[in-house]
Length: 309
Image (cartoon, rainbow, N blue to C red; front, side, top):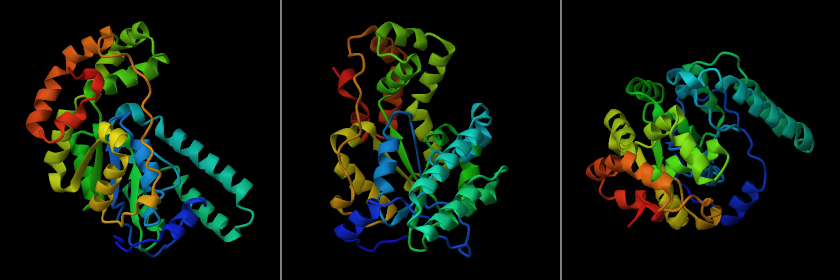
């Protein structure tokens, strides 16, 4: 992993250009150095965009590979190949339109996109993707749905990527379920959200909000020293400090000028006295107690203002 410092000017020049693949076809295919996983609506997109602006960090040009999730979560298996293909097509279109002045970079980009467009993906394909990075770069990717992997899936990931580090993003269970239900309802209306929560989909949202169980599973399977936890509330209230902690965990140089430390967006949700919040608090009260036993240092940061007394 790279640990050298990077000047502000070099970083600024770097991040104003499209991310380029740095082909090293003879590099060992060992998989990524880190992955970002986490609850939906917990700031993963914001964190990934901030981290991958760092010149010492490389990611694939498409997001949410969800390779392991597609193997172990049946509902994702049919959706991931077309989603990946659509992202590859969009990236090709960008390079056709904007890459004329950089023919070598464009050729490299299309080789990488050809690799990503493989019809049949395997463990070797996943590992090999990260051999396109620069030799001195830390490699990573963001696949939020990996959080929901069963124990067998976590073990599979760990065997394919020995030593991989995990950045685990969590959000208050009530607020997370509320945001997810509002997205499904395509509305912030309380009654529309309650209708979603009282369906089978609502039961799934509750399972996705059981952050104590999911954290315990990942820590117990991979070991706590390979997992760094951040919460959505810390990203919103202390974005710079959160980015510094993540950089230290990954072993890359921190420089505040490298990052746009404006916090992630925090859309308005129904207030703490709403019927939807009251119902979710009753359903998820046990999660706070279990998480407090699991990690009392983080439980306060897990709770947003709308669920506090």
